[in-house]
Length: 83
Image (tube, rainbow, N blue to C red; front, side):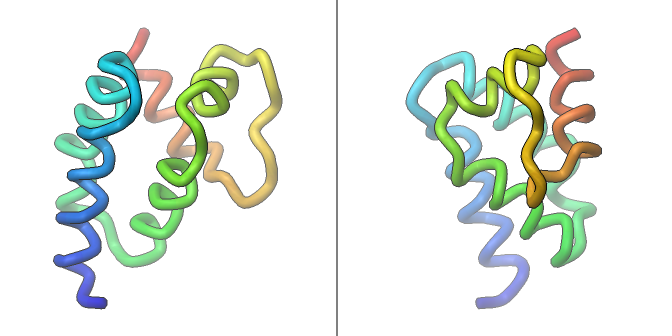
């Protein structure tokens, strides 16, 4: 699938989560960063978006550790949106 198409789908998924809080957090992140992301970063964000909202929130708040395969840099960028 073309990178532009993947970005559009990913942006939609970021803005259409299960909760309004997750929509605002991931949607804002997508609006700020997605346009300038390369293929590798798109994959990293897809890996995050594929997780449940509560799991993502637990990473952001430090309740659970960020597992391997999830970009710590992106999680830290997401944390900067909520702080």
